[in-house]
Amino acid sequence: MDINDQTFKDEFSKFISSLQKLLPKKKDFINIEPLKPKVIRLADVHNEAKSVFPKCFIGTKLVIMREILDRVKLLQQYNYGRSKESYKCYDLFIHKEMEPKSPQEGLIVDWTGSATATYNESFDGYDMRLISKIKDLISSENEITLEKCGEKTIASVSCTMKDVDPNTAQLMAHWMYQIVPELAIGTELGIQPMIYPPTPTVSISARYEKPSFTLSGTLSRLGFQGCLFKQMDSNLRIATIVNESPKGPATIGIALSKKYINGSYVKIFVDSQRCGGFTVQKDVLFHDPPNELRVVSLVASVLLDRQRRVRLGFGFNLDF
Image (cartoon, rainbow, N blue to C red):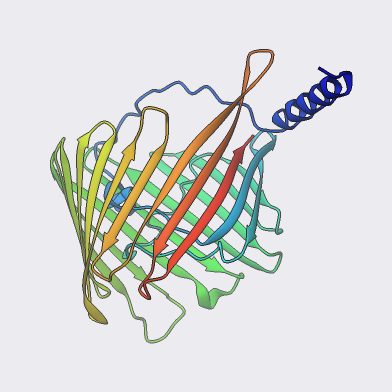
């Protein structure tokens, strides 16, 4: 072998090794089953069924999460094409439903200039949570929540205000009661006190849970939504969601979520609106001496929309 060829291969190997060191290290998680609360929160009444459906997107995106200081994280997201678009597989009838939970205190800063700060405090059996969001250095949203947990009930009252404008103030009350271990009912009441005449919003939800399946439903002025979740085994889940709205015909969607031995996740859905799609997530590991693993999470999305067009998406997730 020529000396120049060997030198080139050595230099190329060093270059690849230096690139791998830029990737985040694989985190070792201790798999501890969290203690399931006796009564579930109203915002999580459909959580199992809706988490089975994929979040299809269009275009390409790169998401980087880096912890700068203790309780301070930097979130960077780069989009190309139309990656901000996503298809809604289901409707949301409950306030703050399916939103990312922020139970821990801390600050998350976005590269676009947005920031989200969370503060928690407990006193006299109540849990207080204050969330302040600043978007694009212009608009803001502040929310304060008081929550009380009992043996059979969970009740909370929250107040949200946008851009420090009292006219946007909204009061929202959630209440969930467990009748028997398998059955729970809840209600939501919302009102904007600064708007006249007041137009309160009311919804009623119910949830029936067994070890192998969960059935839940919500009835509000937006319509009716019923969800069925079925756990086939530890790696296979299926779900069905039925939506009926006064604005249009009833729709039904079916989804499947499968986890493979190699750690890959596949989520597939079809609905009665002639739409369908799937997402595939795979963690790719790179060995970096001495005895370190670097990981990059790859996400691919395929969506068939109502116009029979195939829309593709691809992304990278890096969590440092």
